[in-house]
Image (cartoon, rainbow, N blue to C red; front, side, top):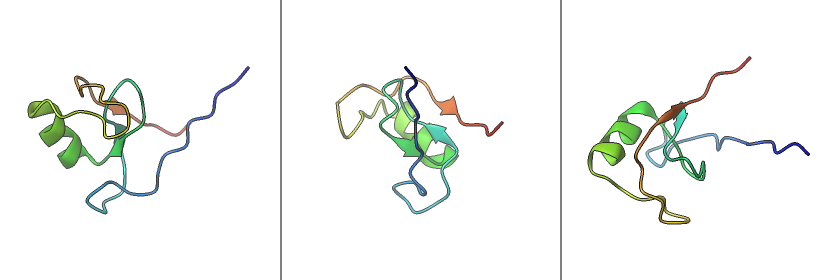
Amino acid sequence: MSIDLILKPSCICGSTVELYGSTCKHMTLCLNCGKTMAENRAKCYECGTPITQLIRVRSL
């Protein structure tokens, strides 16, 4: 079984997304918003998981 993750086209600020903001992968963020949210220990808007790491997205 394969699960395909689809990035939303833009961050909450409107910028192009570069990374996931939590291990739950609900939030897609630009680098600036991701850093700010991780530094402030923000939580995922969908499930409340704390943002403790930023996961960079790369196309293969």
